[in-house]
Length: 331
Image 1 (tube, rainbow, N blue to C red):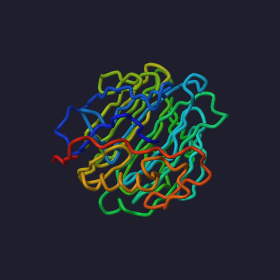
Image 2 (tube, rainbow, N blue to C red):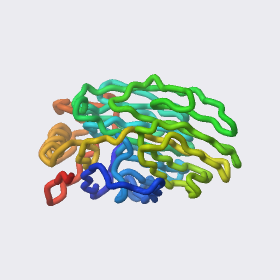
Image 3 (cartoon, rainbow, N blue to C red):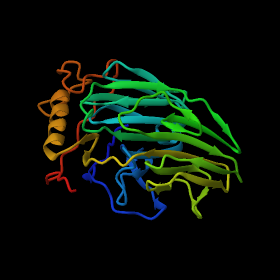
Image 4 (tube, helix red, strand yellow):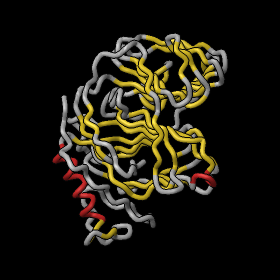
């Protein structure tokens, strides 16, 4: 998904200070688009925390009736230095990218697109989608591979039956199941559905930090009840957690070892410096504009770093203006 905020924030992400055993991050509402904006709840990045492992962006949306919200219609836009992870609870979205991948995003199915040195893609809800409900996440790529060739993976994890719960492990390993999808840093991504009253003990990798996003219902962790749209953060060192559902609940469990690298994230780009981000923006604008006007779907422009999304009638999204200050890296 693009980040089409009118004035996207400047975010310099570094390793954080020590935190309590459980840190709760409240979501902020972000409208995407114009008057019929689709509203998302954003927990990463936040003032409290920029990354959980390599997870650097988390939007949570819906359930929204398409007739009310207008659905999702995200025109071609660029990415660098990251992977996008699409996970739906309800609905259907068509993904198209400049590497030639066309895929449907459906509930319980992972779509992972790696931008590497640069890619462009679109996301449009289909006529079959009456309600949209899901999460869009980004993963920062490490220095060693952030300029790799673009790639795409689709995977349907099998449901794992637990005592009063069901798990779907779409990245990494959990509850005895392992996703075959390769990632550039160790990651965990899983959906957990818990029955009301269920108490579930989950073994964790002690090296990882973890985040638990509540989609619906409520779960108690470390004596604190997490409500919908809250993200609970756990620092490394935990070998297990106990979750108790006070209602029928669904959560996303994310994790990874602390990223260990500083990143600069602006609009849809992840880089390492101000000048690099400026260069990414210039490359995109040069590809889609001529004399300040958008060139249709950019077929008559040089494909450049980001390539062209074929057979997509929506015109590409121009980059917003850069802030009137250098994007500075703080350590």
